[in-house]
Length: 117
Image (tube, rainbow, N blue to C red; front, side, top):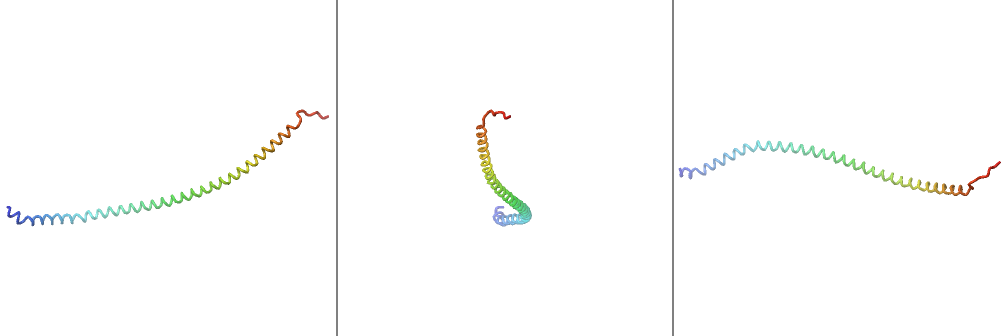
């Protein structure tokens, strides 16, 4: 038996290696097809995600542009309101001055008037 093992051990090992290699080679195409199929599905999902993200980016860019335009309009309104406010303040101060002058002129009149017949 020892002579048989020493004589044919390398041949047996070579046979085992050949069987393992052939088994692996026949399994690789099945695994490879599944792997390629999964990679293809992943690529499709990635492409659709990128498409969605690009759409979101365009949408966000348009929102940013709208916000910038609104900020510009608000700044214009702020300036316009400041001018109107200044004008109103001047007119109110002028009106106050006239009312104080009228009050002072009225206070100059006598309290009692004589009856005129």
